[in-house]
Image 1 (cartoon, one colour):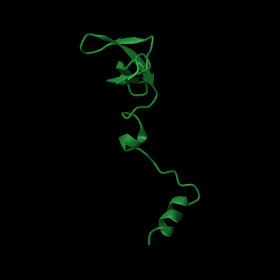
Image 2 (image 1 turned 120 degrees about the vertical axis):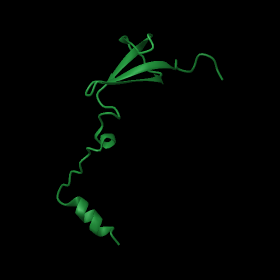
Image 3 (image 1 turned 45 degrees about the vertical axis):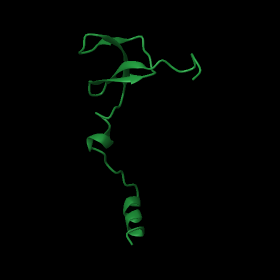
Length: 80
């Protein structure tokens, strides 16, 4: 591999601001904000609006918005 062409891959804390869910993972993203983690070390903090903890698909709160009966029409057409 060539030297100095790959991004810096390091531990980073992501915080879901809608549910205050935080998790530590590795990423190439960086931030000026830091947070002290459970192990006593400080890590860069990346704030996100939606994560798997708050996304409707993963929480089971997803709703199908049916405009003009499209879902029913699809089900009737492909029910065969």
